[in-house]
Length: 429
Image 1 (cartoon, one colour):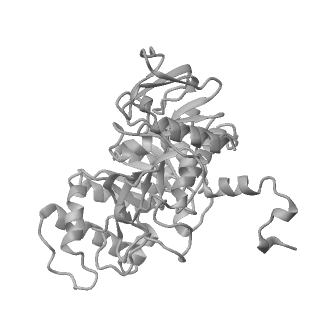
Image 2 (image 1 turned 135 degrees about the vertical axis):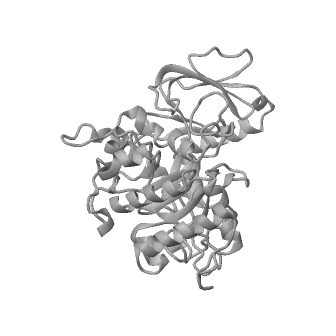
Image 3 (image 1 turned 180 degrees about the vertical axis):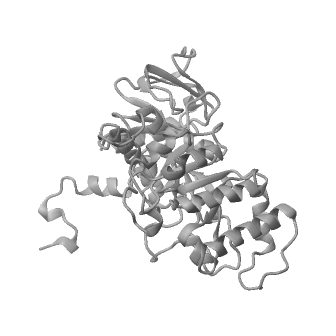
């Protein structure tokens, strides 16, 4: 009921002419999201969809005051890897725009065309404080899965913050299978495609079957120029070293590793190459021969070596559980107290689910923190957001307060107090 009342209040505020006034969120424990320590009794000033100021700042005259005393105030969570909006549920049944294995194209496929802002996983993510998400394509018949997007989880039908935000590539064992059966074939396919994109001329020594189209090569040109990040799914340390060698041939590429379960073994080389990583803390046991050295200390050790690391759920439920990022970040904080393990600080952990993934996509000046000028994605929590029992009480995206009801919350309210005679006919006994 509390969320229903909040949603009603949200709609009234959004519809009110007073929404054009600045809004000051006051009195809470303020988290900027850039890795700095929380500020007690902080203030966030929002106006015209942007953050005007945050910290110990003066409240402008005439501002609408939102009292967040006793609460936590943070930027919205940025899901570092997901497929929310591309499918309603996991698995192959029902409407899904996750994969395009029968398409003649690969690198050119733009996942933004398939995002459905009405999909329930978007609503569920929003209700748990996720305001932006990296959405990756599920794959094609090539090592190039296509172009990912950054979206918001707002209530409108304009969800795409940036289309073509990154190029998604499979390497390691998965890439080997797509390229013909070996890592050597995958490396050759990657180098050949990047060379064509860099030099602007097609290769002439390839069979027609499996060749990249002109549209695919055009899609890779901003990648080799370093204008679009290349997100590479890879786990094994030797594969990571090979990617570092490939990056030396194409030094302008902005490479981000996804997974990197054995990354800690070559952390110094990753840091020296200026490569970022998005990893999953719960990948702490080998799920394949590519992850034999997996450990839950992977992220802490990468971070200690100087690697920029974001946190995301990668291995399971990526169609719907973008909200799990804060649980993963909280696990990293707890890990500091486990003897012999390496975690990160609370401040670092929250940045890993807010400003760090935004920075990796070149959107750090727009989203992921409450610094002046950023989009006004703000969440008021009833407690520490890295604690599982905490929930968002109010959420703004682009300065617009959001409805936090979900199908699950509506069902819960419907059946919370119901007598035996009030059950639907299907439940009659």
